[in-house]
Amino acid sequence: MFSYEEIKQIRNQFPILKTNETNSIYFDNAATTQKPVQVINTIKKYYCNFNSNVNRSVHFLDNFTNNYLELSRKQLKYFINAKYREEIIFTTGTTESINLIAFCISKFIKKSDDIIISHSEHHSNIIPWQVLSQNNKANLKVIPVNSEGELNIRVFKKLMTKKTKLISISHVTNTFGILNPINKIIKTAHKHNSLVLIDGSQAISHITIDVQNLDCDFYVFSIHKMYGPTGLGILYGKKKVLDKFPPYKCGGGMIEKVNFKKTRFSGLPFKLEAGTPNIAGIIGTNKALQLLVNYSIIKINSYETKLLKYAIKILSNINGMKIYYNNSKLTKILSFNIENIHSFDLGKLLNNYGIAVRTGTHCAQPIMEYLKINGTIRISFAMYNTIEEIDIFYKYLIKCLDILR
Ligand code: PLP
Image (tube, rainbow, N blue to C red; front, side, top):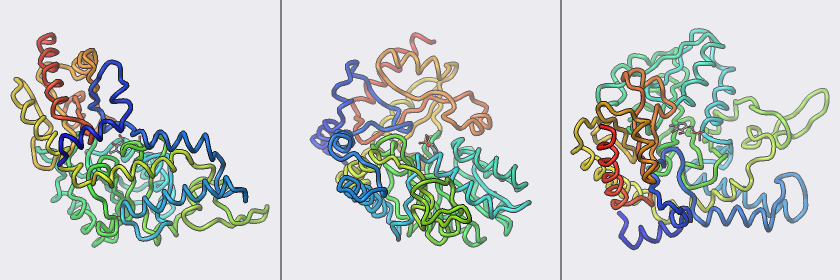
């Protein structure tokens, strides 16, 4: 838990929270988090002082940049406790990480094989598997959710057979913030020799991740959701699995030798990282990791949980309030609807009072269709949000409801 002084200190590191002229409240952290000054300054310093490409030249700037880039890879390895540096692949985001895996794995998916996802996935973790299943004539199977929004593990166990080649599931759902029982899922999947991909987009800044302990085959996330720059993602994959992957994109940086007869590809991680990477972003990431390590994920988790519980408590007083879902599996995200009020109308009105919330289907239309709703209002917390902000939000929420009702 953070002290009052620590929260002040944290907030001071985020320029947007100070310079924001409208004094707005930012509760859309599940979409992207704000950036601390040390990330912004590091990116600026790279462009001002040592901008160069990586792995291309022998000059001092290239060496400098390369060292910084590999330092970030090393820090990321420690951050998620990967076994080898080569297991950390830089991508443009979770979306590309999942697409990369789907592309590379398609070679091993045969007609009538099964791929399993859940009903609550983000579109990024649905469509690549839908396309792959259609192309390879495989089956896409879906784990249903129960009335509490939790995965139906009984059905999941029935879906698993020797035909299951991959299960791809979010660690925390982006719609409702539900923590999925991934330990159980990974163990069951491995008993059936299936690979497991965990989409950690909504968990990475909130839960300590240990990929060796989890024993997942892949863990993917976006850096912009953990106080780092946009346009950068991580694909963690077990070395023995990634070693079997064919190249995903082809071009500079991923080859050992090219001639017109045959091209010899580099080993990991470069085999899967063709072209110039997002160097500035990768270098900036180091500072985002430092922030999370310095304040401790465990403390961040308990502080964000306190915010969430407080928000649930006061929002529950509102007439016609439906919270998805008021249970112990929730983390840092609170999704709700209010009877006879459209989420867009409420979101737009709240915006007039300088409060940023997310409305709509949150890139997860299948679960909305299943619940027969056209969306929700989603508030999501980060380490810099406060109880006072939740009180202000509540005050204006009541004002908006007076207007809309
Ligand atoms: N998966 C989940 C659970 C998400 O919440 C998001 C983004 O909101 C994504 C995937 C896609 O992330 P990105 O757009 O950074 O690739």
